[in-house]
Figure 1: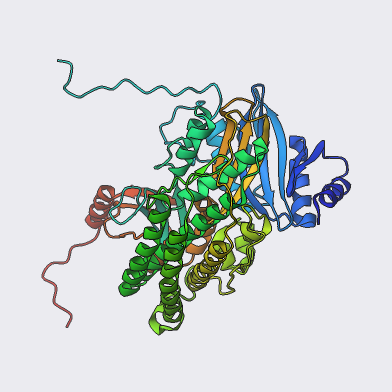
Figure 2 (figure 1 turned 135 degrees about the horizontal axis):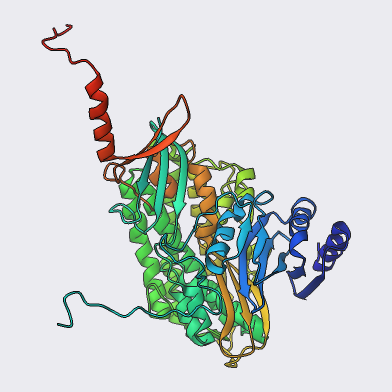
Length: 157
Length: 400
């Protein structure tokens, strides 16, 4: 299946839920959907178009919104599903019901961007330490790391 | 009663810091839980503050074994964003280093698998041969581990005729020995008996849990980025994707040995058909605005970088997903209903020592199903309290 056929089939099967579909280079497709249509489109991708493998989930801080990208791969192509959630209410539904292997990537997004993944089966932090302050999200653009001042035990006498 | 045993993160037997929590019932693992983050260095945040050239060297240091994988994946993406066409000779040299890296990584893994299975001479043989590969890599790039061969627009070093003949001579020795290991590994009865049936991962589970690399291919799925989504002239190079249908550790071993043999063929082809010409083109410092997904078949599986540029000399976002993270959900599935003795084999490179793990027991009342966590001291107190109510018999006669 070429990229064009995949895009046309997807548009037909999902019934106008695809806001935008581009094919900038060979074997690369980027589509955009609304967060509420995400699960429906992903299940179409999995059931009808054979995109079984989720490579990873990327989060991007775009200022007013967060972009979440789901990178899928099949024998034919690499398809990225793009969706945006507002910064004031960063919430997205889990896709673990369709792709069980997405759990670690969703937990990573929760840690690094503070995007709440609704109905996730395992909401514990994955990478950040247990005593990490709540509401501090390292991969947001407004996070600046500052090295704490070094205190030498027994020094400065 | 089931007990939860924490293994790691700092443990004499673990090679890398990771925390595993095994819920066991007797000898059988009922559940496994993985806690990550002990080796998280914030590389993705670091990328955003460095230039594209500096980031090559940061990417090289993500991993100590597949250092070439991350840089190739990264520079391929950046070249695509800048619209650069690299010389064919450079692409072939990238393939050469990539396949040498695959051989050294797989030989290392084979040795570790032999060691965990109690076959230590296998470990010593394969690690001896790995030295030959490391020497070749040093000959080409000047380094044994961080080759630093990639740059944006091509490679940094060329290879000459004497190096070519040297590599081909070394390959002859390596090929003969690998063939011997293949016969040994698949015919030695005790080795085969130890590996077969351990760490079962069905084809359906492997796909659903998004496993990658030899783990996925050993479950009968022929996914290989080099074939599905070719980069660096892989579409011109003849090779086969190695799979196995046994879905266990033996299958993963066979897949890896076969991949090593395929890599020898690829290297031979690359050296005999190396195109003439330059090895690099000049690349601009700034990268135009855009985004790309770059994939690469690392020794451990699919490696993916998502690069978003904003028109300056620093990336807006660079996401890295290394193959091991993709394999963790599958590893948990493999461990379930396995035996404690198989943990080291399934984790291959991890060799946990159960007896020196922390003393913390999770007590489950089998009748009511309730769970509580008790420390060792609390358990002692509980036993004393329990003991008070039991009648102490004095001067009892020995029954026999």
